[in-house]
Length: 366
Image 1 (spheres, rainbow, N blue to C red):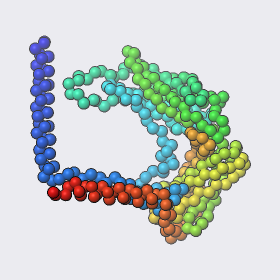
Image 2 (image 1 turned 180 degrees about the vertical axis):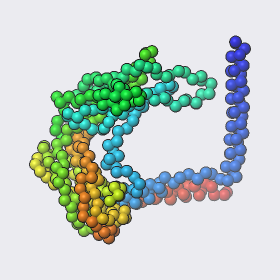
Image 3 (image 1 turned 90 degrees about the vertical axis):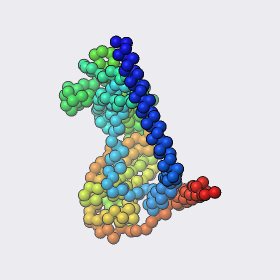
Image 4 (image 1 turned 120 degrees about the vertical axis):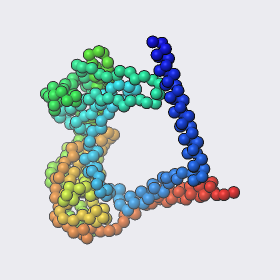
């Protein structure tokens, strides 16, 4: 038995030595080729960034084009992120919430799934260990906030009840309700951490962590909108019901008739309580270059209370308003010329030219 083990180790070392020798020979060959061909081309990051600044400078900060084929950026910001804590071997616990922001009275659903970690092949001589979780699985979550402190614990299940979509699919669902007595002050929000622990029948444990925003916005959209053209820009006005004074941020994404996002717009104002109006101005050049025509749709819109960090996010409403039909030529073609970005572009161009000169001097024949 000892001889058998010794033979395996010897074989591993022989194979490893042969591989290292082959790699060394290949590396020497690559170096020889490089000396003949010359230094590899290094991307000019400064020049690339300068071009990006130049393009962005054509539009105001409050209204930017959405690149063709990209999703609605406002909706994309609200997609929860799946988190998996790193583990050297075996299984990991992937967790994610059903949404990123909640208000009082809304149930919060958290999902957990045991996922197999990728094999670690950095050290070929380390034999794999068994890190597979075995059932039955017990998963619990704990909620805590920097202001509220501990908010309680809840259990997960995979039986098709209490919010679990399908029994036995390996995705466990937990639900907890935000306590009304810990609701943030109106116009404010609190980030809550959700720590999840999964344990199996043999005592193995996995940890996961995610988070949600407990939000108490001080304003909401009433559902009333109107629009008009101003010097080649499209302006959509939104009516807002304000409960408490503060600073508010309105964001919207304009879609074409096919539902593709074309341009974003945002506005911020300090408002007093009552019924107020805020404007979303979509820059004409962005719509003209996107080929906007026909009736356009306010595909997504939201109002946020921006009194502190974190902001008190409001809900995102979809496809709430449609404009009259427009021709593409109705929108202007004026470039905005943002001075701050132009200056950044000039500095990066200067760095790019210095880089090129340095490369020329380095490779200039003696």
